[in-house]
Image: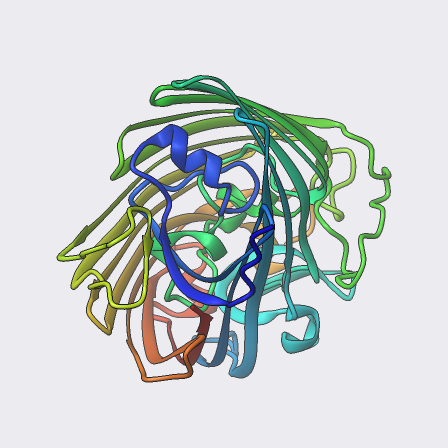
Length: 422
């Protein structure tokens, strides 16, 4: 029996076709980036198993400036580590086991890191204002079964006690266009905040360039017990549903539309259900690469000299009890020129009275405009570890209702060290 135990540093190009890309199952849940996406990771072949390990961590210092003492400074770390094992089942099927973890429960102190105008979830029982909550230690525990019905048609079944239902694009921690930014988008809770959900079941049918998915899951957001899955006030039962249609006409382009009914997502508003809709398109392309083996970069291959990843994204939530609606819009671009990474994030995100602590039902106040510009440079590192030093700067234009509190031109900056397995 053949046994190969050496660990290889590999950059995987997901595939040359959409059907092959979704069979790789490298991103969270059942979401799929364009087939031209690449992902650095460690890989080992053992018997008939393919074992892969991917991980990224940011060590970040943030400085913020706004009126009314809204700006905060902090040193924190965000991270994600994903392990995956794949095994063929006969000629037409494949099983994938995947686990994802984060150390943010200990490296993000005070139960959130500062981010002006960010809101969502709680810290010590109070709504988080101007901050982003940490991810849970268990980000995903999942099993996937892919069954190829014909050369152009396949079925995917996904089961996860902790996982990512079929909502929106690939979540920001795993999205190529957001790979070098250490902080979350402001529109996270209108776009992809369900990427850590309990008791997820998804069925997907892929034919040629189209994929249709249906998910059932528990709608309540995770509690503040970040080290273990704690039941929400309404338990862990599957009480929410989503559907997503994905279209990938070429290996460089992927677009999706999803609609979701979420039961009682917010701990501070029990019994208030939410409808969420998202639409997005992602374009990824590389130039100047030479690969001896299609689908992965091997030692001695020529990596891409230039690559670009773009995402445009709309997210909308509607409180089914109060009828309050919130829209968010995002444009992300990352340009990589050899070791240099430049990235831009432009957002328009609805903010609510929760930011001001206003009593009564939560209502939308207006849209914050955020313009982020960043750069990092990959340094020489260990064979299996790629470090980069970088910085980013964000300037905000708040709506009139928030200008007296934040000032007319609040801004924020981060310097960071990024570490990535390769």
